[in-house]
Image (cartoon, rainbow, N blue to C red; front, side):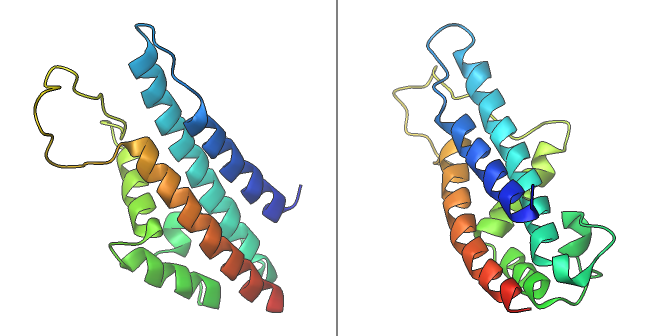
Length: 154
């Protein structure tokens, strides 16, 4: 499988997890949280695959996203573009990097929905993780198309 095919496959699988209904039994909330964190983990693998894909021409030895998107990463145009994107707080990549850091923490990133205070107006993170991840994946796919075009020119 090519890196491009793998990236596409991982993005598709992440979307499938997000679109799987959690059911309505006593495990539904845990199943939803597992699907969200699973989809986020697949998004991390897709990011890794994307980095491999757009740096293929440079023949890098390593493709860890923390390294390549960090300040010491290779001086490749596609990586520079992604670093700038990650530095913008409102970008899909900044959102993804923040959630990936949380995913790797001992607290995780998925949260239970509070059903006890159904009558109260919720303040704080308005969108559910799954909805935010759907947005992130859609934005990522648009950016990936542009990155692939630039990478193919090499």
